[in-house]
Length: 70
Length: 569
Ligand SMILES: [Fe+2]
Image (tube, rainbow over all chains, first blue to last red):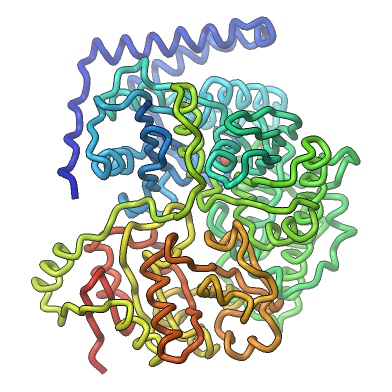
């Protein structure tokens, strides 16, 4: 059997922040599509909530139908 | 030529699959390593295990492919939460917390957890990943592909035209209409755990009669063009993550069954619940048949590939094989969401110019079991372990003597079925074996069948259908021949069928050797084959798991590669 693969160290805060900003940019672009324009205002509220959740470490909740909704 | 790791995660059965130069090298469900059944978490252990098996480091990967579009999923969640206000206001915070707390950042988490540059992490549509996981490892150049699950981003059912490496979407049924969620809602109504109890519903169906078609006609109906729709008043999956069905369903079918109550078919209400399961199964099969016929009409293809959680319904698959008009039908062993990891990896490999993989020969895509480690640990525990020169012959003798043997040899399986690498093996003849298996290990409901594994070339001696593209992976059923019923008393279901596995040397060499030895000893080359796990546990993966299983459960013998431990009488 091959030797175990060493797990990478957790990237620094700046690298993680850059990755999150990239994801947020992708998200904004997704919702700026004309067909989804009506959802754009909601997105601002969502992003604020998202940043809050990210800072607080998120919520862990698993319900049976979790995959239909969440 | 590319090295691609596919990932599915965050809903149920997270998994990783590694494709190198167009070849499926390893595919592992996270639950086997984390030891959490149906573990939905980010499958980093599985991912690193795949890399370790191939001797690769994360930096060697050309791409990591996720099996879903997180933003499209968020959009669907948002649209439905808004559309169904005020019903959804209670679910709103939790739904958004789930999405924004972790799911939309999944590509970042993968990049950081694996140590792969963020721009190498790509994603594909959920149903396209499912479709690719079936078509691209199937034996068919040209096939219709039918994907049926709970829901992906928005689609719950899709029909694809598959040609070579290409998949073209032809038709879809979108959330909240969903056969997967219909089955899940009824699973919850019958008192079983959703995402876990669906097999129980399928087993229960054989104990009832499809008497409730009139009621079901109001729950779900075909729309005439080969699609279907649910009566949404009967369901709650649009607004409630805890309960899948609504009060209208109970008005139609009577009160839900209390979870955990022992089954007793002397009771009238339990017979009614069996009728509910039987009718659900019949209705599901009818709708799948209509969808498959539509797929055939749209594509003109002779072959059908199925994927998605509903494709694990072996009874329905057998009916599709017999009645949908296709010459051949294929279902990949991990047809549920775990399979999405494989599909996503194959789609990314294709984008990087790799050839289409060879047809999937075996489900043994996990890690091997470490016999040295097993011997060391068994020694430390003072277990009477010994080496045997011919493990298959030893297993065959034990099975022939009526013993229950825990069998851990080779690489563990991909998908929910044990196919001989991590199996409990026993003689298929005596129905009492079933009771013993249930008492010692499985604690299953009395209506759940055990399955047989048969030497491929002898299938016709025992079953009415020969080997096909599904039987090596146990994703279909066949009728047990009348003259073989007595010899297969422990593995014949109440309806006269069995969820058989046909065994070839190239696909499951260890189990093939056992069956060959049984034949050489003058016995039928058939064993009862059930997964090597206790109730509620994931299937055994490594040496420690196998020994822990041995210590917890009263099986007669444990075989780990060439090591044998026997219970002293
Ligand atoms: Fe799915």
